Image 1: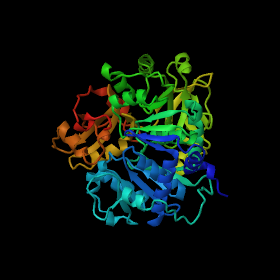
Image 2: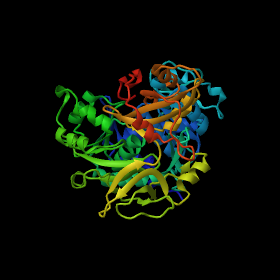
Image 3: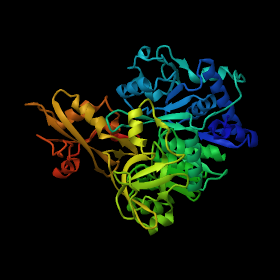
Image 4: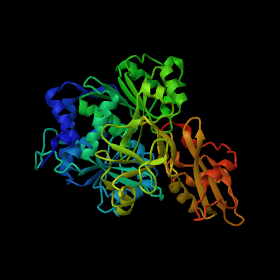
Length: 528
């Protein structure tokens, strides 16, 4: 049985029928109506089908925020293909692993990934993917022009079926990669049902309406930009104001110019807005709801946002679930330090290691089940069982809950830290460090940073009489890891404090030595 109403492309088709002249997307001063957007989706889907894309095939994009990314996302849903958004900031080594893991039949890339992709040998992948470029960058060998080819199919819709799907709500719609605790990224398979219920949750949280204008500065290759902002806005028939990346002056300008009503940012984004030059600041009176999340959120930053004219509410979640917990402005005042209560469409609990649900004011792991939970990790049954074998998804976050049901984050049971809104798993960084011939062992922890929230501090044990400077260690990571994953501080140890089972006691490392700042070129821009 086909369930068209769960498919995001169907939402756009319906709004194109009901309100064809309504603006769906604003991008670089260009407005795209819902009728125009549906035509773009149909052309893109027709082109994708003409090159052999079928239901279940993976379609990867390595793009900054732009309408073409939305076109490919919706066209993939239209055909039943699985959309795989990849981070264009990643290195050739990182992208090589991801492409080899998800095995896409099509890769659509932008100018920002051109240099990185030049280092990949596409003939080694199975299947060999079709590569299409968006924009005016130099073509790679055997590459085709995405926009030119799609325009050539204007008015042609060679579909073998009218159905938009899915036939099963649990069909995978998106594979979104999250860094792995074992050092390799895991692909969370997100179903059509999950996307739909995420939209329902965001609808409630944001008080969404047909008249909303949502400013999107967060990257759409992450859950925040795609599932918390883009999809709910299209579901409600609202307008997306899309920025290719975050710029403080441009954000202020477009909030006033387009009367933006809804906005989502990580603390790094809000700190930049608050600290901006006063001549950049415009009229923020149109803003009805802003959301803050993605990193640790302090009460101070919330108060500063309110004082600056950003009416922030707090959210907390992860790639595998999107939003899990939320708190309104009033709740943040009444329950200082809370990360909120569970979203409407999810079952969230706190449990101990034995799976027993803990009582008020007891520490437990945040676990969730229901329609917002991912289907599985792509081609990784062992990690899927480890995360979901109990019937609940284990988030790895430790929290307490008070008598009123409000959650308070205590710690992460895993080592992950968040830098500028990007998840960083130390195991991935440590694996790269251990590959250095002069490094015997490495341990990485997140430490506070005024700009990025947290950055990495690497503790290393050198081999024999080896001598490496802090700059040498950091330089080794460059090119192998995206800039935001590279450590900014380095310390040396002869040995690490360990538990009886040999696990490094990282909290003791973090306490043992003051850090010395090592500047990194990669951190000179916000998106790095």
